[in-house]
Image (cartoon, rainbow, N blue to C red; front, top):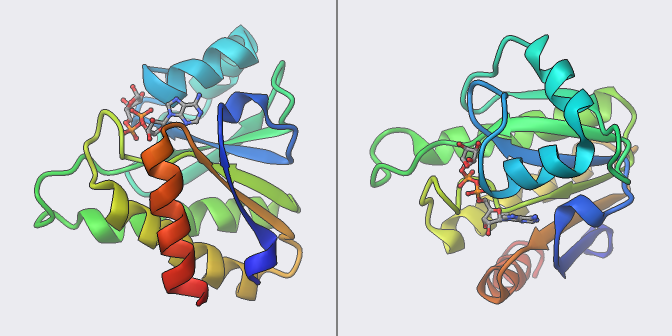
Length: 172
Ligand code: AR6
């Protein structure tokens, strides 16, 4: 299983994979951070398709085409805003990963790349977020044999270290 997981540093919009995951907000109409970068790189057709989706509740995931991106699809998920951990944040973040993998598998995507959902503007603690991401990757790889490549994209060097620590803890 571990060999199907890659940890890379860089810009998720550059990856030629079946699907990249967007850390969106409930409107699905764009924003800053990775969401802004994905919309800029995909072009206005992405926003047009997103307008037809009627938003997305926190923890859920919806798929669109990738348009001008090298990735074929974008899976839009909405992470929780961190309020200290007492507002169901952990379960909501877990749901983002679970539902993104479920949507990917349902559309027969075999390679999927994730940013560190909620760890930017939404202030979710990085170590905890990377651990949840890794646990859910392991579960998804066990559940969906059609998924052969999971890529965690670290934008900052500390995120790469956090993913590497999480991979050791989860996969041994
Ligand atoms: N490639 C990969 N990772 C990136 C990129 C990139 N091009 N750009 C940023 N990151 P954030 P959130 C990392 O703030 O916390 C938006 O306005 C970044 O370093 O993008 O889920 C939405 O519309 C961080 O580790 O998303 C929402 O309103 C991670 O991506 C809100 O922000 C997530 O940071 C969502 O906040």
